[in-house]
Length: 319
DNA sequence: CGGATTTGACCCGCGC
DNA sequence: GCGCGGGTCAAATCCG
Picture 1 (cartoon, rainbow, N blue to C red):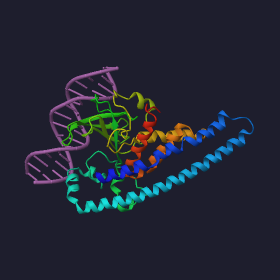
Picture 2 (picture 1 turned 30 degrees about the vertical axis):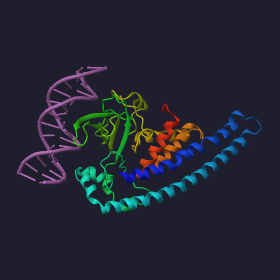
Picture 3 (picture 1 turned 135 degrees about the vertical axis):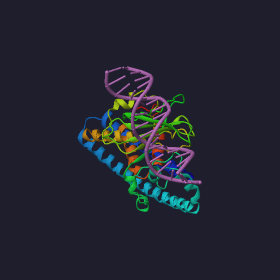
C-alpha cells in the first residue's frame, strides 16, 4: 500500500544505517588500534578498562540517540498511520474488495493489513512502542504467527525451494488465481511435533523473488547450520534476504536469520565481550531490527534498510 | 528399499 | 444449493 511504503521509505532513509555506518566503525577502530596494535606496554589493564569505559559511554550515548530517533519515528509513524486509518475509513470499499476473497484464517491474521501484495510481514507480536497493540485486538493472531519473507533467487531458478535452515517436506502445489506461478506448500519435517507450515510462491511483480509465508513458530532449533548453506534438499535459491538493494519492493525479513543471530548472541555472551568486531556490529544492527519486529511496519522498513546497507557494505553477502 | 516429491482428488469456506 | 478457489491428502512416482 502506498501509505506503508511512504512510511517505510522515510524511516528507511533517515534512520540508523547511515549513522551506523558513520558512527560505529570509525571511533572503535581507533580504540582497538590503541588497545591492540599499538598497545604497548605501559598499563595494559588500565588502558583497556579505560577504553572499555569510553566505549561503553559511547555506546550508551548512541543508544540514547537511537532511542530518541526511534521515538520520533514512532510519532511520525503514528501520525501517518492515523492518516491511513482515516483514509481507509473514508474508502472502505477498496480494502474490503481485496480482503473479502481471503480465507478466514488469512484475513484474520493479516488483520488490518488488507493489501494483497506480498509486502507485509504479519508479525503478530504486540508492539511495545506502538499503539497498535491497544488499538487492534489481536487475540486470533496468537494462534499462528504468520511471517512473510522475500528471497531473491537466480532468474533461471524454477524451483520453489527456499533455504532457510529448516527441513521442509512438500505436501502440495497449487496454481492460484492471482498469480500464474504455482504455490508450493511445505510442512516442517519435524511435523507433527512442529506445526510450522510454509507457502512459497514467486512474486507476481518480480519472478526472481520468492515469497515465503511461514505459519506458526518452530518449537525446535534449526537442524544445523549446514542445512542453511548446503541445503536439505536440492536447494537452488539464494538465501539472500536482501531485496532492499534492488527495487522498490519493501520488505525482506529473514526470521531464521534472527534466530541464528540470537544463538550467536548466546555464544558471544558466553565468550569474550568483543565490542567492535564486524560480527558484533552487525549483530547490533540485527538486534535493533529484531526488537522492532514487534511492529510489522517498522520491521518492514528497518529490515529492508539494514539488509540493504549491510549487503552494500558486504557485497559478497558472506557471514 | 525407504524417504521425498509429484499431482490429481478431495475437503471446506465463502460468495452469489 | 452450487460453483469457485485455496488448502490438504494420499497414491503414484522418483531418486539416492
